[in-house]
Length: 400
Image (tube, rainbow, N blue to C red; front, top):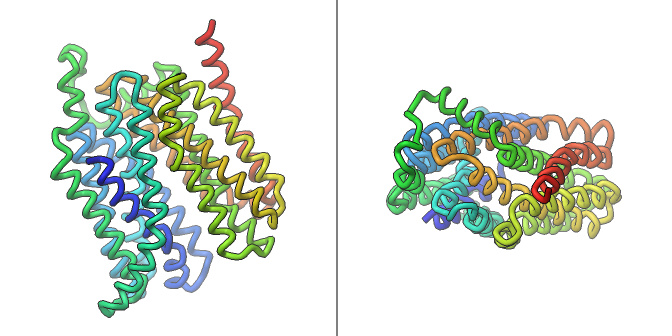
């Protein structure tokens, strides 16, 4: 059921993402507001991740995921109102709520991990991430359908797009609310001996326990670092590659093909990483993925703006490196902490990840404007190096 809900949720998220910056620019009359919208959404994801993790910890996976998708559905309705009213502030409020869908999509991966066998979370998580490919492919097409729908019911065309997005979020919530039974996290807890389950405590105490669980495990710490670094670097480079390509007067269609190669690297090969992690272990896979990401930064950072093939290869490798670090890092974190501490630890991990994204949204643009695309890749490479060093240290320690 998580996989089915992920299909609806990822389609809704992709539909909204496809047109969000275009609509924001149209309503505000200036491209300068795009950065504001992205920053607001990024900051919201940090708070939303903590909130959904808290709900999950207290009431189970189903409650946390349903809350996230319902909030996103409400946000889509607010976006429709903002577009209809031609109100940029209303649209921004709706967009911030819609951003909860991305948080919820990422949190869905842990629902599968709850029921995975010991040290075998990678396969389940990889399937959930792979399903996101459907959203990446169907989203742009659904956006065109939404525009037809909007004009057909006497609404602005962009409003119809958000009607499609809201329907996807609502369907995801309904599927989870009705069919995700029993709750995987609560079921996992019931299978854990009572003496191994700490007494319930307040939110702050629980999150401190999650942080302590991460600090107390070298592999959990490595998983958090790898996931956060991979996501931050991916967002930084992916966001500004199209701008770099426009400096070389690349056509929109060519830029779209380069981004398609990136999305293919991000999602299409996730089952392969899940299989590899189950065969050779997660740490070698994560370490190898950092090398792939460094290769992507070298290829892309040295590519002129008109070298479409090289940039396509670079973004494909960037997506592939992210996939290995994200999928396998998420599974490694799940397998490295006790069941009762997992929701808080997983929530904190995603908070760190989204914080990195917020910093990337604000800082990468400045680096690109002042120093250029090449130096942006260099600085991102510096961020990847600690994850590589930690991975090598774990590999050496494991063989000694």
